[in-house]
Length: 221
Ligand code: ZN
Image (cartoon, rainbow, N blue to C red; front, side, top):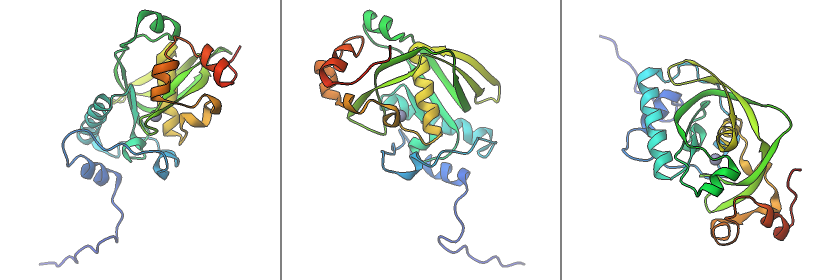
């Protein structure tokens, strides 16, 4: 009969799978990490089966619940403290038709992005207010490539290779940036920074033209 020594507290760091198990031990939406936590800045490692199919499915389901409860249109694993290259997106696009048209905000079904990478297609740029669940209460205008090619995998390991434009292009860039330790504020026009209240009261127009004029920031040609 062998005797195994008791593990010493803090002696062995938890594996990623153990950390995710721990995170999923409580029901309901996961706590969202706010800006200032290094996990949002360190970048992530590509997902290489670390969780196994069953735990990955549970983790993705928890990301979906958390994103919907927030509510948000995307959520990246580092935002719940997990440094893996995984994100989820979903946008029912509940906006007025003129806003949907100006921003290219078409509904986006729920989907899982595993190891996503994007590259801009063409010189076009689009600038709009966006926000982040890890920077609650604030929005800022970000000029981003209008069209990107996104490559990676889905949660089943199927190849993902797709062109995104309009609002979905903004969402996949924002979430993929999270996986590289980049926050939207890093790319934003600093003078456009506005509270959610200010955006709702003053800058709800389909485009940020008036905000640019009144707050004093530039928009792409
Ligand atoms: Zn975000």
